[in-house]
Image (cartoon, rainbow, N blue to C red; front, side, top):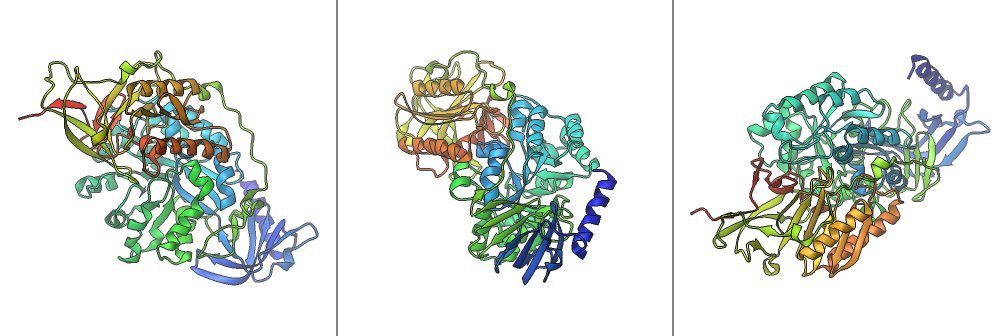
Length: 602
């Protein structure tokens, strides 16, 4: 923005504040939730000029003209628009525009988005696609440059790559707020040159380095990671995680998404240990479309955190000003104050936090849960909608789990991925198995199903197969998904190889998504043709389709609350303990490839 544009804007704000020219919008008689001073002040008016706040005080009648729109708050609370400190649009399975359509009526007026999902498919051009769409929205959507594409070099093969020069280039783009979560935490404390070069480029641009330390080890590796430069972290799951991060100068991001429910444990660092809440931020990380539609977004996180016993004002700070200050945008948002964007929520009850009216960038965009403004029409190029590439149609034979050549059929041990409900980490389970005709079969009594990773970016024909435990799938079932963090190949789980092949081929036909097969019938599916990750349909429709996938899981015997999101993380090789990639089974604690089946070592 040119200096003259800023000068004209501030002069107009002064003129409205002084009553020389009328405001465009005035809100009267509200209770001002003043997050910057820690007060709630009754009987307050707010005057808006253009997109920004010009005046906040007890009487704004001097700013009201014949054309001024007046909203009577009638004692409702005036709350700053909610900010999601860390999230992935792609996890909602909808585009930025449709995500905004779903969450803006619920009070979200700003999001800090890390598009590393689409970056793993398309690289920097995928990030630019997201940034350009973000610029068109009626709320604030800031974009971080993904840092780890791939997340763990040598352990997986993404569809594209991002390096230090890419990061340096993107830091100059509009809407770029910083570096996305530094997932390769071993690369940081082991002084990987690429990781440190990306962080250096971010520092030179004066922007924020996002963190991701997913290990429970808070010893020297953690201290080395903190020394490397990440400024926040959302991967904590325990009170001690929040304590350690804040004490080391990092911001603790407490996440409450669809599958990762980490606020309750970590907020005890504030409620029990007395740490300063201003160093805690709220985020969702990954939120399923069904959760968005049926439960909410940041308003849901606020309600949950209030229910844990915190004062509503403290919680609102964690969802507004704390986040704005962390990302260096508090001069523009995160508080109701002169000069800031007019992002204001009218809320009847702070203890039961539900938003009635949403003002964003100076205009009313939602009333009573419904959007009242038009959103941009976005067309996607063909390369974005045709990204599922396989060498040939998949067959049952591709999903056999063969024992290594020269291995006897007895005294074998399988390294099994153990799913833990509601948690991103997995267990590394070792079980005794016996070969039958040179292969390992599923074992329903021990809940041992097949898991396969099908390469889908370069049509190599590679399929890796192992065992998984925790889904409790019945016979004749298979589930397949192209949402497979972070490289987003095709991941397939099942109890029958024929059904697994059928599910995989169904995804190729749809050009991405999730599908559930039971005894040759499709019982649930959600097509996601944009990068194999997102639909261009409304969130409500995607939620219905995604619900059919969840119902399909249930019909197959799975009782996990969000099994599709649990499935999507089983290829995330930077989170302990055991994962699968296009290169094989990954020990994500020691960062090495291991065999799915091996002989017992005596």
